[in-house]
Image (cartoon, rainbow, N blue to C red; front, side, top):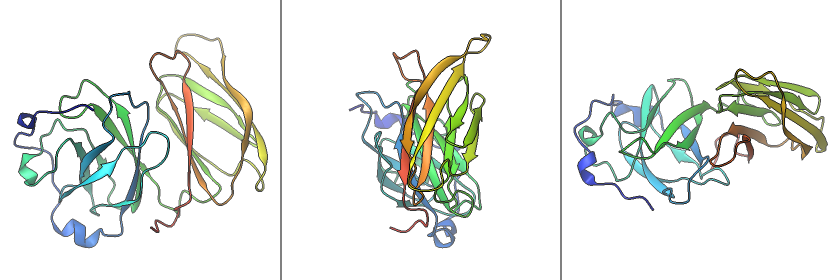
Length: 233
């Protein structure tokens, strides 16, 4: 596991949420997944929400347990040690801004060895169950490639870094055909990404990620089912 010197935790300029954020935001929840985690990646870290920190799991093969974090407009950061003094958080820590009205979020962690505070990068997905419903799919393209194809009865078209909410690809609990391709920048050739069958579960929300992983030259597609659409524990 990677270890970090405490000297990296210097006075901060990271914007901090007021303490009242916890009182108004106890209903905000988050789940975490660590894509493309290297072999020596940390399995846990401290998630600081602008008010306090808590130890969180960083799973790579499934979604983490549900964590409760501060509400309102907040910046969350991942750190190698517990934060006792908010002023000890530095602006170089991997962080992401959460929209004020987002009540359910997914934090997407990817490897970033250039960050000396913690070797990760953070992205946020607004997982509001009123917008992202059971049976739907949420696709996130973390590659510089164009990705497209068919998901059962639904089309998929993702530019580099794009996201797309896809309505249920099948009518019920049944198999559907997945046929996806990708195209590299400046190259008109189309390369196969995946051709297979998946099982649709109308009771689950499905997160799908397209991302690059060393030493693979072909993008990887990984998906996770979320049955906690109401944020219940």
